[in-house]
Image (tube, rainbow, N blue to C red; front, side, top):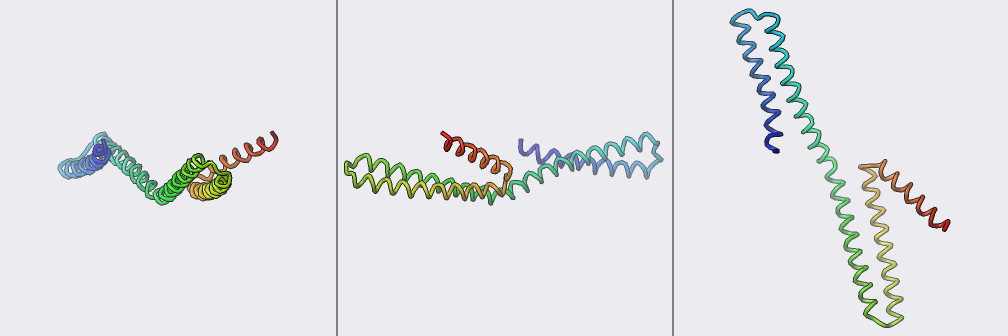
Length: 155
């Protein structure tokens, strides 16, 4: 399928070039009628236009992927950081469930508080990364979060 996407536009452009060459050769051999000239020009124009459009669309997609890649890497690193942080939180919770000491519970709660603060900081950094890519969506998310916080405070 991908080969067809790359070969199709090239074939259309080659078709346009081929028709142009045939048109030039035919025009040197005899005088073309107005209808023949118009049809040749329509074939050349249509093939070139469609081929150029498809090539342009593919180029725009590739350029967009290249522009997004650095942001995607950054967001992926943040996601990994959150994942590792959640793993540490789960380990801390499991360790506190095994222990019966009240003192260990306080230490576990303090560690969990630090881990959550770290996760929130990482999430805020990730949100800033996404603000570079989709600022409208991030603004909408922040408004929703403020609305939810306001509702919780009212309850």
